[in-house]
Image (cartoon, rainbow, N blue to C red; front, top):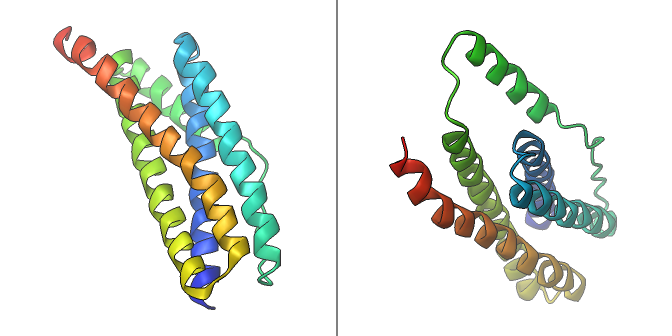
Length: 163
């Protein structure tokens, strides 16, 4: 398998992971309206990226499919949280939110690197279709990353000093 196919798989996998994380965070923090609504919107961007990557991958004889958007990671996290609550060691909601935002930032950062790698490969091979894909999707991934980082900056002082 050549390097372009590998990076297309990596981008696809990373976007799937980010969709699952964003949906789980939106569900877990549904009472935090800004978190819930923005995370839901950002998951939509990653779903669009998945479709665009899948469509482009076909041109490279690569079949990338996305599983149904069931939030299995969200379900598993909910079970873990319920077990912790019963044991009397439920984390503070604010700390949980900070952890979730950190994970979202890291996942979006990972995807950003994959988009950059794809763009570099596209430029090296003069592949306009790949470059167009990376140029269309990467800016949204950067915005996902910046949103998570901004929310951490806004919430961190209040949450960490109120413990």
